[in-house]
Length: 383
Image 1 (tube, one colour):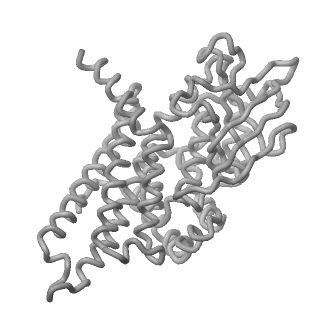
Image 2: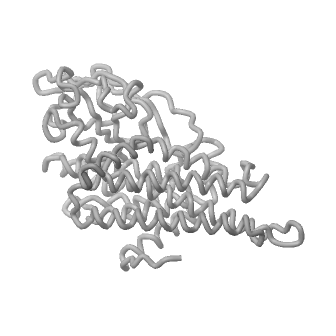
Image 3: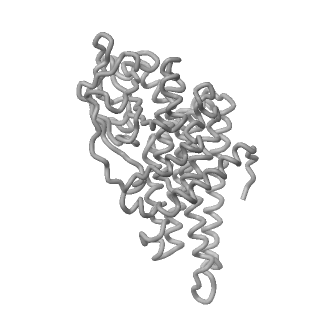
C-alpha cells in the first residue's frame, strides 16, 4: 500500500525472490511442514541467483549490498515459507562474524564459498543452561600449542548438521566470565565435532535445529576470530545486525497471513453477505494492515540507518525485532479467527504462519530481553 522508494536493484531482488518462491516453495511449503523435512531445492535456487552473496563484500565474490537488501530478501522469502527463510537467514548469522572480525586469510578462505552458497553457515551461542543468559555458557576452548581443543554442548542451533561452517562461542578463560569468551570457526568433519538429534518443533519445521557436541574437538589456532576474550563482542555485534532479519521474517509472515485470510473473508458468504462486510471483521483487517505497515516502515528505516554507517543501533534493531514479531503473532492469530474453522485446519497455511510466528518472539533474544535492551538504550539517550 506504501511506496518505500526502492531502487532498481532492490526491486529486481524482490522480483527474483518472488519467482523463486512461486516455483520452488509455494507448491511444497505445507507438505514440507507436515513432514518436517528440510528440502535443499529452494536453497540451491537462491544460491544460483547469488542471494547468499548479498552481504558479502565484492572483493570476496559477493554483491556487497546492505542490511536493507538482506531484509527485503528475507521478508519476501518468509512470505512463502519462514522455515526456508530461517535456513537462509541463519547462514548470514554465521557469516557476519567472519565478515566483521575475520582476518584477511579467513575472509579469503571462507567468504567466496559462502557468497556462492556452496557452504551454509551456522552460529552457535546457546547452550542448555545459557539461553537468555548468554553469559552463562560453559563450552570451553583450551589452547594446546598450535591448536584449540573445544569441549561442551550447544543447543537449538539452526542449520546444525546441514551447515559446513560454524561460528562457535566458547570460554578460553572461564575465570574471566564474559571477558573470557572467544569466537572460533569450526568446520563440518573436524575431529571431535558431532551433531545431535534434530529437534521436533512447533513451527519453522522446514529448517533444521539440532544440538552440537564438542568432545575434544581439535581445530587449528588460525580459526580463532578476532582475539581471545572478544567472543561476546563478536556475538553481540552479530545479533545486533541479525535482529532486523527476524523482523523481516515477521513482516513477511504477517503479510501472507493477512492476504489469505482477507481473500477468504471477502468470498465467504454468511447472513447473505461476505464476512468482510461486517464491521468487526473489516476493522480487524484495517488493524492488521496498519500494524504490518508500521512494522515494515520501522524495519526499512532501521535497515537504512544501519546501511548509512550507524555505530550504535542495538536499541533500534531490538525495536524492529520485538515490535514486528509481536505484530506477526497478533496478525496470525487474528487471521485464524477471521477464517473460522478453516483457519484451524492443517490443510490451510494460516495455522502454519501462526506456529512459525511464535518462534520469532523467542529466538535471537526473546522479546522480553529485547525490551531490556530498548530500556537500557533509552537511558543512554534521554537520561
